Length: 171
Image (cartoon, rainbow, N blue to C red):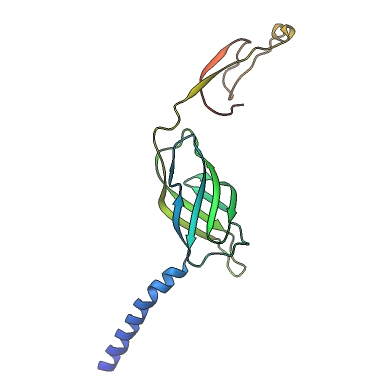
């Protein structure tokens, strides 16, 4: 009976000793830099990974901050870089950062590494605004009823100014 108890205790101790090694093998996000931005900002974010990570030849399929998808993704074997444009109307607060690698050849599921609350969208984004005035020419186009619009807004006549546009590109 004592021997059985000893073996159980020894097994439990060995298991406890292996937990750090098992945890270290799982890929994790060690750091996110920068860890914050404001709505309207465009930032290049560097995400340092730790643990058993894919080789540098395997580029991540996606990188996201909350629902914002990164572009221009690169991976050097220890850090992922991606460009993010934080939408002007993005909700402020903390966001999860997720890096997804393709599934290894012997597995069905991709490798998904997430750090909860690792990035913060700050309040007080860009409050700058601008205006746009369009003059249509030639006069024959105006006489024929030509108008213009910005960002799918209402149609405007030549010489009209649209105000309170956010700074940046518009269509």
